[in-house]
Image 1 (cartoon, rainbow, N blue to C red):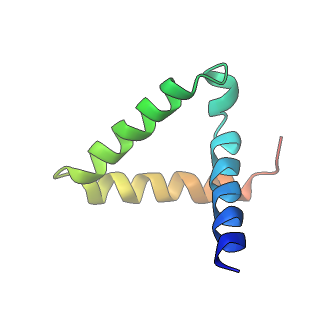
Image 2: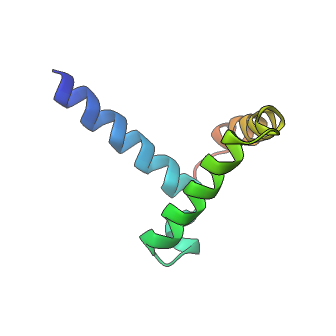
Amino acid sequence: MQRRERTRHLIELGGLVVKAGLVDLTDDDRAVMLGGLLAVADKLRGDDCESARLLWRRRGKRAFERPRE
């Protein structure tokens, strides 16, 4: 059961990468995508993390509300 839940969670996270357009924008270059995600993680470890989190949450919610392209 836990394995199935973990698999579903990972698939949903992959869907976020696709919804953000990262696969197309990077020509499926996983090193570029990982580098970008590491930059986000660094930002969230910094002093200005709360304002970044607030901004990204708003943008994410708007993206979820838009119809899928």
